[in-house]
Image (cartoon, rainbow, N blue to C red; front, side, top):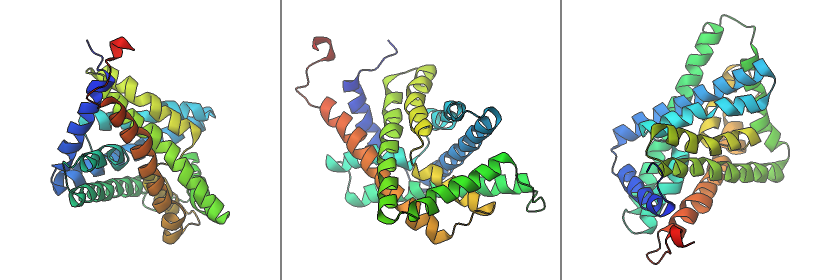
Length: 270
């Protein structure tokens, strides 16, 4: 059977966390950079679909393509790791230092890949700054970058709290996509299972730390009135914190600790 039960998935979650924690820094950086770039490409594709059709749901429908590539190739996305790697620490299987080092290097890798694609996209669309007429995608990136930073900053603590809550809701769904991909053995099954929650988060406009590693600096490159401190203080740091809470609490811990109990009644008896 292609389907893998939630109880089996709980075991896969822990083994995946342990495998991630054993990866050397080189692999974390390479796989992290590829993931950051793939999500950035997906955002660009989603913006193109939205501007061409005028329907944001169409953009949300195509956005998951990058995420499913990440899942199928076993690459490293820090938002997904937030739900898994800490579980190994909670269970005493890895040290706190190992956990934090793993998450930090994946975060850095995601950041490198996101900014690399942003730079390449800027160079390609403006002919390295020679063209000043911006297209709809580039204008959209400017609007998004300013909304995700200055928009929150304008409302002070209430704006930052809103970003934090949106980040919780976002990574609840993103990490659900990571876990859902473990419920199938087939490539097609993984694509469908992983893609559904990702469609939800993107369609609802929630805050994803790695997506923001692309859209905000890309918007800045195209002329958004956003400073480096605006990027990090009004969005990146608070969104990362929210992603940790959403992914770990509402998906990682919730799924693992309800299905990994030794006395758990089998699903056939429910």
